[in-house]
Amino acid sequence: MYDQLQKALCYRFRDPALLRGALTHSSYANENKNLKLECNERLEFLGDSILGFVVADALYRRFPDRPEGEMTRMRADMVCEAALARAANEIGLGQELLLGRGEDQGGGRTRASILADAMESVIAAAYLDGGLDAAKGIIARLILTEIPDRQLHNADYKTALQELVQRRPGQNLFYRLAGESGPDHDKRFIVEVLLNGEPVGTGEGSSKKRAEQAAAHSAMLALFPNETAR
Image 1 (spheres, rainbow, N blue to C red):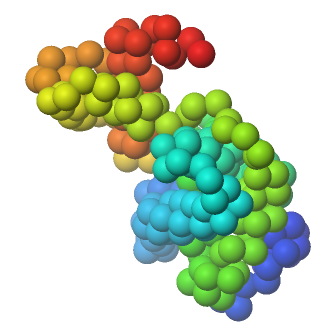
Image 2: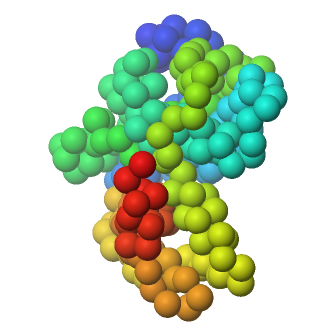
């Protein structure tokens, strides 16, 4: 089962059910409730933390003189949705996903958000199956193939906005969920960012985390257009 995918991962699962769980999108689980399947959202949560830790560890060791803020932005670029989707495409992950009929017909196998989430889920599944070394091996082959020698473009807009705002003392940023829409398998979230209680940006995304990043970017464009253009 999933021989080609496991070959591409350079890792063979002792428990194939873990890999199947990582590939099970919520739309498939919802359409096949009689099978009592658990979708990959819990694995995605775990994989996100494992990925962040492994990449942070690699950057910390590679760049002993870099400040925390710069490494934070470098890590954000390396684990962003686009980067994870590229890694997923390299191993043909989209073709192995278990998607609901509507999601499949709607192009879910090539949707960056779904691919990125599945990539994180596979990392978590490998961790549960073979420990941290198994997860680190996959991350090293697919994510850490080219650790940059310099700071990447700034993709962590929340951190960047916080740094800019804190140039003046007494400033307070707060992210508020303003709304959500869509079915459970294709949720869209709207987040508003407030500065000292006043709304300064709004963003939308397939998760609260991504909507917050979009809201922070919107606020940066409004409040610090010169900084954002750099």
